[in-house]
Image (cartoon, rainbow, N blue to C red; front, side, top):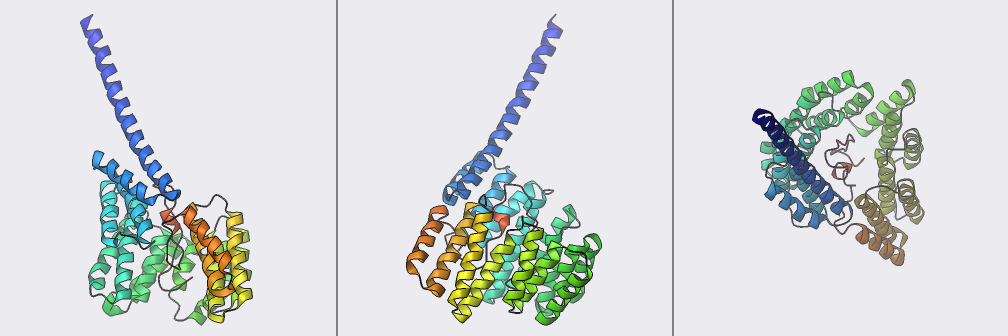
Length: 360
């Protein structure tokens, strides 16, 4: 029966087409993951080459554009060839192709505001023009996830830290903080804390929260950070170690505690405090053996810097720097730690919060 045979042939053809499409998509996804693995193993430059090839073969691959933006950012932070506008273009393309992807939209927004922040630091007149584009990009994330703590905290911060003539708006800052507090009361405290007028009031705010709320890792951590900002390293240690005990998965507590100890040791040239910083960094390496190699490389770089400038042990400093270079030749040269948003697996949304107006 020819009609039966035709149906069988058509069904088989459709199945083959579907299967070929699925295999093509899977191959592309695997290639993006391969590029990510290359970057995590110290070959960010090779990752860029592979990702450009993926995009040449399929100009509609949003994941490839996203990973390309992250790879270029990774390399740029090492002081190499890429410029922020190239990264914005790739991040924007990823978000354009998949407008409902929260991770893509968030990375795009962070990248656009990083450009604004860099312009502000350089005194550029372009900062005010690009500021609204960054706000719009963060608002796009809220259209996907209305209660995104990272975005609402950042919007609170940038509207509260900038002067009015550059786009600052206290009323908008308070509105974003109130929105977060209504949907996530604990994270909302972090936004409200940014509205405090000075460092002393910031500390008092977190002391009050600590004394009047249930035990919580976020509150302990932020109280510790407030003590750091006020220069009380011993109290900072107490509460940040408490926070780490309550939430051992939060590795940034140890990284920031190490950085703060190191900064104070540099100011005072206190060798014992420098050794304390090394101990905190070693604790990170011990407790997080599976941390991304670029983060380990950053830690070794900080340890090398501590040995060089504070402890005065050049042999050990060179050893740590060699370990850094072996793990990631494209390790960030910035004192501030690179965001884990660069290192989570492709498409994963990183929920951590970094601050622009303060070191911790």
